[in-house]
Amino acid sequence: MSQQQGSAGNVIAALCNVFVPGLGHLIQGRLLAAIMYFIIISLGYAFYILVIPAIFAAIIHLICIISAARYKPAE
Image 1 (cartoon, rainbow, N blue to C red):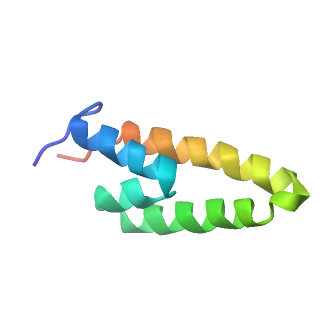
Image 2 (image 1 turned 120 degrees about the horizontal axis):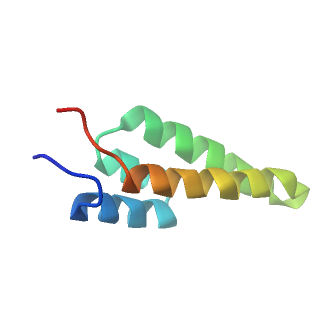
């Protein structure tokens, strides 16, 4: 199945990432990226009391969503 940037699959993956960081990447078959994003963002949000990690996590979370939305698999 060939997905193009902006395809329905990428939109679904981006929406999944909004709710669970890394889930969209997992749906796209990118296991390493999914694990990396989930761990980094979860740890950042877990230390929300320190403010800076939470801001860092929010920025990485946004990058995670955009990455899933713009993904174009190698042919």
